[in-house]
Image 1 (cartoon, rainbow over the protein chains, first blue to last red):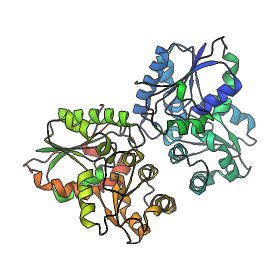
Image 2 (image 1 turned 120 degrees about the vertical axis):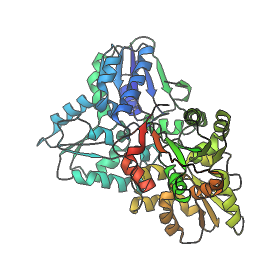
Image 3 (image 1 turned 120 degrees about the horizontal axis):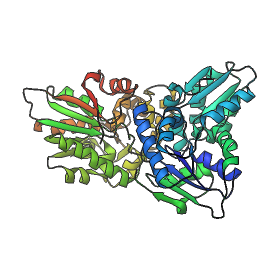
Length: 246
Length: 246
């Protein structure tokens, strides 16, 4: 069984990291549309077109199951992914919502994500939402701690304090800065990490074969790729990487 | 005569603004690849492919002259643009370098731009260069003044102080925050704005016909487009805008 995992760029590698930790030796391929990242600032029409092309790529690779490791695609184009493929499709949204509903004490759940995600109809259960558009470029630029990151965390998250008891990190990038967010919120709000929840939910469905496939397809590979991939995944994947066109 | 102006996104609208100010009534079309912006963080290979598609679009529109209003394309793919078109092509680089050489007192010229631009072989005349990768997303997100912008200006520009007397703003986005950069540098360094220099240099070559064409083609149009375009151009262009695919 080969699992297909895709994201707008490298953010979905936080899902891969969790996937590898929880189900070692499971075969998977990853597609990161690094030539067109970010998706979260674009129109729904464009996001849906990109999602269709991403899915077709995985279908052509004969994957048996698809994990949409991108909240923006999960929020705006999950129907496109399902239509385009005949295999089971799992998004990062439902597992995160289920976890949030499970741990919230007063049903006050917040959502932070890209502009496209928070403006979508997904995550109906949340009572407060805020985009945090600068966090993706900050993380991709390596600002994963320090005064610059702290300034933006405060700007985007201050509004949640005393308003919610549970906050969904609605972008797979944010897993990288979970500790910094936690520190800022000071324990007053429980965080839900969609990467962890998605992998928890699907792990029983994965059949581990004898031969383990691990491959990373990217639409753009540049010098900073290894640095960024290392940051997301905690390991060097350069020899498992291939550049592709969609 | 129709002038074709293109950029990775909306940054090139700073060139358009200068063009309209200096040569009112000149016919032009603008192409912004807003579905794939930014270019400056991608590989040379991908930037060159995108530049080829951008140019082909303008060629198909029968433009008589092309202004490459993107420093990243000018730095890494100007040969692609020239090969793809039979009309005169002007980049933002040479006029900026000429101006810098003209005003520098001790031949110490600096360059700030995207990572792709500063890593390229263009701008051979500069003695000190620094990328400022977060400035493009900051400006596009509307952080055109305030503590967040100031923090990043200081981070990226501190190294130029007392080292250069002239600084080339090697990205058309930066024209938007010229005053903030000037304030930070406190008059110790003269700034060169490529948008101003490019238009100065080509203005005598533009023939103004009776009928003025002004059209903006974008590969993605989303809700924030008008806001951002307004910021770059200082006017509302929604009724002159059309979404296209490359």
